Amino acid sequence: MNMLPGPAQAAAIGLSAVLPLLLLCYARIAATGGSGRRYRLACASLMTLYAIACIALPGQRHLDDVIGGLFLLATAMMFFYILFSLLAWGFTLTLLTALDKAGRPLTLEQWAVAYMQGGDLGTFTHNRLKLLVGAGMLTIADGKLAPTTKGVAVARLVKFVRLSTGLG
Amino acid sequence: MSFVVGFLAAVTFALLSPALQLMARARGWTVAPVTLLAIAAIITHGLGVMLGVLVVAQFQYWDAASIFGFFVMGYVFAFGAVYKSVSLDILLGLVGRSERKAPLSDIVERQVPALFQGRIGSLVDSGLVEPVGSHFAATAAGRTMAGRVGQLRRAFGIGDTSLYDFSSD
Image (cartoon, rainbow over all chains, first blue to last red; front, side, top):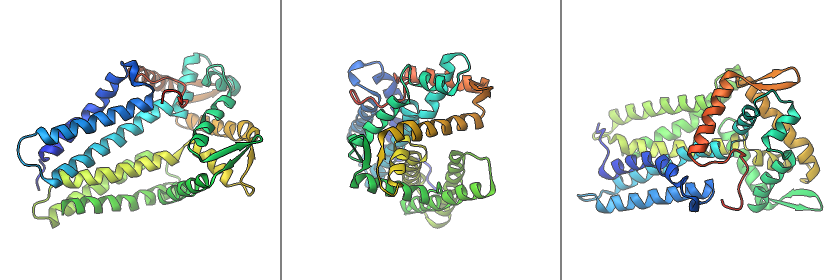
């Protein structure tokens, strides 16, 4: 068994460790925009650096080495995205931080207000609905919500994923 | 050939992982779903390496590990996306209705508060929050976790609302 990664794979492993550092750096540059945009920018930077490494590294490139490196990079991007999205858009985590920030016990209603920083759950609902409407999965007409064909297809896919991953 | 071994290990993971989730629910295990995913990944990765060493003459560990990692992480990504998504819960709730329509007020006043209470239940069950009469307070473990989350958010320049930012995203 050969435990040593190929040159491109070694570059991918190194670059994977660089991803959180890139995110830390981009957080200090206002022009990089919001959380989602910053993450995409960091991933694009990583892919560019990998392409440069594949060209610049000495010796002949082997296809299996380059493909293995791409798989490793994609793995790291997905892994860090899961953690990053929890920090950025995690509902349950934000409930906890809102309660902690209040510094005193809260009733359910007070907690909802603290979570929304003065707003209410209606604001939160509209924010989540805006995502579904923007993605073309929902329509709102006459104060009623209805899923589009795309929304129904996505819902079926979600049910399939839930079933096949054992979530029921 | 090492890629094939890694792929086979990933397929085994995709079979073992739901089996573990279903067993945990059926037998009332208190192990978190994410822990079960990690257990399935460790077992199938170990099995993959053993298979590679036995079957492939020149087994390339990183070729196998790269494709295994990619598919397992894709699986975990999909799992995480559907596990506790508020947006998808709203969509599923709508599609699940016979008329496939709902007044906006019903979502705002009934479904989202129910989701809110469900998440509070999860925080209480995991020992991060405790009920104090009609109020809720963060436990010591909850305060520690909230502090760490706050530090990470500040370091990565992430706001603390969890709302989607449509203007700059």
